[in-house]
Image (cartoon, rainbow, N blue to C red; front, side, top):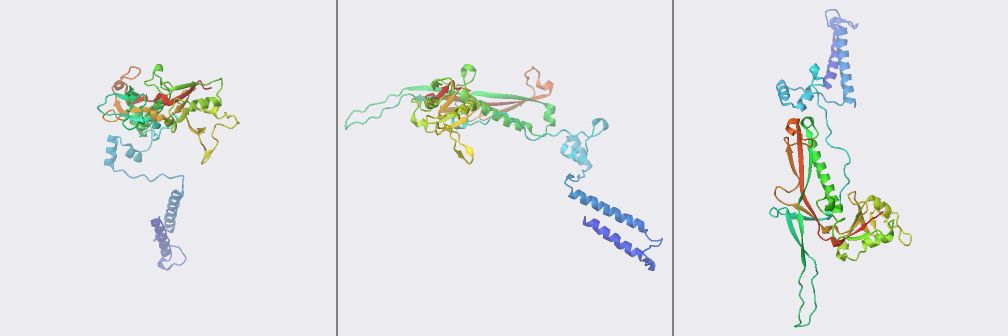
Length: 386
C-alpha cells in the first residue's frame, strides 16, 4: 500500500515538472513531452487499484487469502500423490468432462446426533481384575456365616468359628460390534470418521454394561444376571394398583440388609417411576421428593437417599443398595486388555458378500467383561411399580 501511494506522489511531481518545462507556465505540456492525458490515466489507474485493495482488505465478505504460487515440480508431485491440500490451492472446481479438477466433498470432523443417555452405575461398582494367568474364569470365595467373638474368664474355654464358604465365579464374556464402510467413503473422508466411530462404540458398550448391571437376565439371553433379576436380591411387590408412600418405606427399610451397606446405598429407577414419586406425600401431606436445590439445580433425593435415573433400568423396578457389591471383571493385562480393534477387507458381510470383492472395509471392536452381583442380599428391589 505504501508503494502505491509513493507512485501517486511521483506521478503528481512529474506532472508539475512537465507543466513548467521550456518556460511554459500556462500548465500545457508541449508535444515533444509525455502527454498529460497519459500521465493522468496512469494516475487514475493507480488510484483505482489502491481503492480496490483497500476495499478488499476492509471487506469482511471477502476473507479468502491470496493463493500461493505452487512450483511446477511440487504441483506435479501433488498430482501423482493425490495431495488435495496442494491441488485445491492451485486449481478450481470443475467438471471432469471439461477437464476441470473435481474438488471432493468435505466432511465435518465430528459426528452429531444423540444416541445414548449418559451412564452412571458402572463407576460405582467394584473393578475386578483378571490377570494374564487367570484365564477367562476366576473363582471368588465368599464367606457366608459370621464368626464368633466371646468374652471368657481367666483360664476359661474359648469358642471357635468354623466358617461356611461358598464360591462365585467371574467369567469373562465378549461385547462386540462390527461396522462396515465402503472403501470409496474412506478414501474421500476428511473427517477421521473411524476415530469418531471408536468413540461411539465405547459409549454404546458402556450403555450395554449398565443395562446388564441393572437389568441383566440370563433367562432372556443375557450373558450375566443383574441386580434386577439376580437370585438372592430381596424383593418387595407394590402393594396396590398405584405406588404409595408405604411402598417406598418397605424398599429402603428392608431388615435383611446389613446396616453398614446402607451408608452408601442409592436408588436406581426410570423417569416414569420418578414422575410417580414426585407426586407422593407422607402422612402429613409433605412431598417425599426433595424440593431443595443446590446452585439452582434440583437435588435428586427421596427421604435423603440419592435417586438415579437410568433408561436401562427395568420399567417397573426400583432398585436400592450399595453398588460396590457388584463386581465388574476385566482383563487387566495382555492382549485382551481394553477395547481391541481389528480391520479387515476380506471378511464376509451379513449379506454373504466378500469385502474384498465389494470394496468394503470392516472394523471389529471387542471388549471382555464380566458382571457378578457378589452380595445380592445387600440389594432390595420393588417390583410391579406403576
